[in-house]
Image (cartoon, rainbow, N blue to C red; front, top):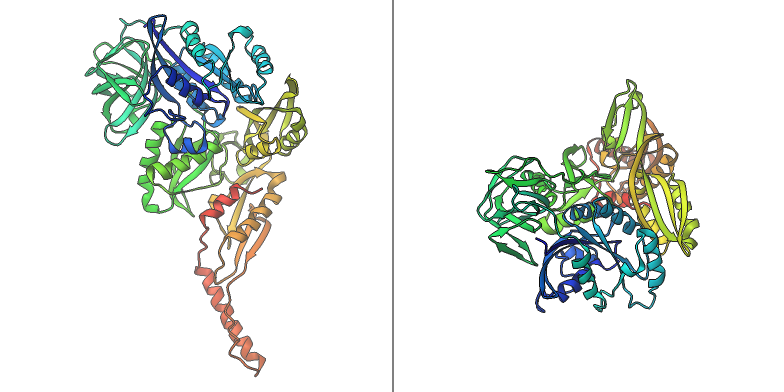
Length: 595
């Protein structure tokens, strides 16, 4: 056990975590030349296309130092704020972390956020400056930033180039020398923490775990403490690039178990595995429950696919524990699910994965956040969907979630960023200079204002230099109203939204104009209206397609023409009463991208 090291790589997005993992695997000769490729741990096509890590990936490496063999368990983590839950789970399975900082960009918001998470869990931090081979690198300045952040000695910081492999052997030596071996009692009853799981259509659910105390053998009868279910350990093993079976796993090891589990509800990330014959006294404290930030309705395009969508979401949830969903129905879209996501990128990735991995094409409604609604009796209900809002006459007040946002940027972009945040009803709390011309701006902003296009706008006005991180701060009283979109007097609940009273008229007008472009013309006029309660605040009309019924009248009395037009008018009126307006999927998507 003294020769085991469990560590993860944490960093801001695009600071070179996956490339450094590639070099560590190469130096330890874990994979042959044929298996080796760039971003070798990113096994999803989506990750390779976008150049981002979405899932944490674990791999075991063997390393020789001074004639002694060490087992290194590496977990490569995502860097985007939307996947921070993956990082928290990886940290729970480790004793140390490599903090990677880009020599061209310096310390950024997610670097700080992930670092604090690691320190709170008592991990040993090894600071690494990456990309020192780049022409725009300024490693001395970045070193000063890391010393200010960590309070460490400059000698402790390792300079590497993950692309060329320079300095990588030093990183491996530091892992062995600085990161402590796992602590645990090999003789105690089995206690293993589940930190991830994946669905395999042939073998059932494969569970990844870290053994905290005790050991496990192939064929043991084990149980999951929280669910109380019992299983036979059909196969256990360690995670190389492929799964490598073993007959025994001991304390401190990261491994997997296959026991033919078929239903996803039986596996919970954060649960504890123990023996049935000699159970442990108590479960390991797992990680905190995930709190979704953004809610959206997900509906199958074909209503008959509802059950397929349910099973697809359950399988996806195994692999992505931060996804939550509950069934709901909509007048316009039929039966579907109300899904909770950690952010807009997370929502986009889930939609893409449903399409690619499960062949499920879905309609996603306008994303919104959860609100606390207090009625006249003082009873609070949580509302995730504008359709679930009580009658306005019964509402005393509505509270909306506020986030504490940290934005790190260069001082030249400070003006436009402050203007953007104030335009989103934000309050500037403080501004601190980190080093040179880089500063950190702290804002309190309503979460509902940032879920749609805030991040894109922030990146474009700062030329990609601003980094953004946030956490839920509190709920505050706000003047919020429900805005409905009506088509021929019928509300389309998938397009209704809860918005601040000051933004209602402008947003209502823009939505009506956008829908006018996207809804196809019918045989009758379609009135598109934005309404607050009974008050109409904006209107557009999609003109009817008309046939010229008077074309056959050459001259003659005008009453003949009028008679034909009146007959046509009566027919259009009848048609309007029985006609229904189909809203195309691109209309729902366009509303998300209203600029």
